[in-house]
Image 1 (cartoon, rainbow, N blue to C red):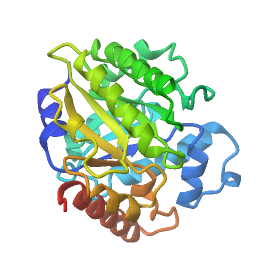
Image 2 (image 1 turned 90 degrees about the vertical axis):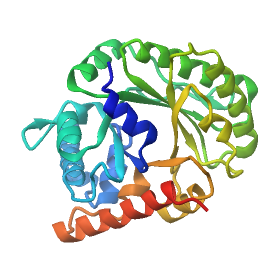
Image 3 (image 1 turned 30 degrees about the vertical axis):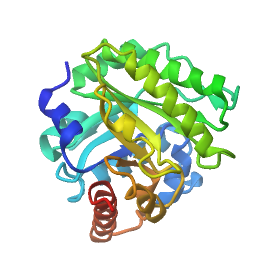
Image 4 (image 1 turned 120 degrees about the vertical axis):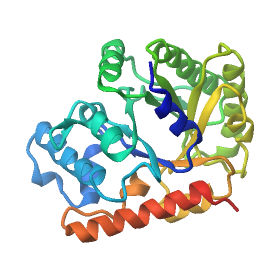
Length: 298
């Protein structure tokens, strides 16, 4: 079962969640943004080694601590890796005070009904067992929504809740992430349909069950307050969705109770070529901005 102190931190402590879960498809882009071109590595193993080095640099930086970064979402291989000779999850919690989660989805199916469902996860139970052994508190899984299509959005919500139940059965806290894409031609309409489907799914959960939700920052400020206040919801966090950090934080600050869970917007100013002082200063500035937008609302 998940550690009660970790759960309390995730539910109640001011701060934000760092997303360090770029997978195989998004890793080349993340490395390129970091200043490492595809010509710098010749194999997937070398690519992941470089990515792990980047994440290690982030995790061990002074700004990456539990007083502002309350949790982080890891890629599976990062969860299985080590930092300073210790398993990453235990290092995060015991040395940095940061609660570890792990991304469990295997990417997206082809679009149908304006949405992309998650691909099958045949090894999910084995991954969840490993996560429990390593001291991970919860999981995250992503679907995407492009169109305001009732059938498609209902299918996304249904799949998220179904897989979430499998995760909860292992004693882990699931983060459901049905992302409405920021380039949707009717983002507000899609968000309205999604809100209804999420409320329906939450109302159907057993009384003792809780989930987290990771959602795009809504077009209408405070639109997701009914989810934030729902008794089955531990916390609602926001993805940056492709916005730069300044834009994402400007949108986030208008939503009470919603905290950040950023990836690219957190890391966008970091470069491989930076000295440690430059790197730590850039990460520190990003951390302060995201923390402020998560905690100090207008």
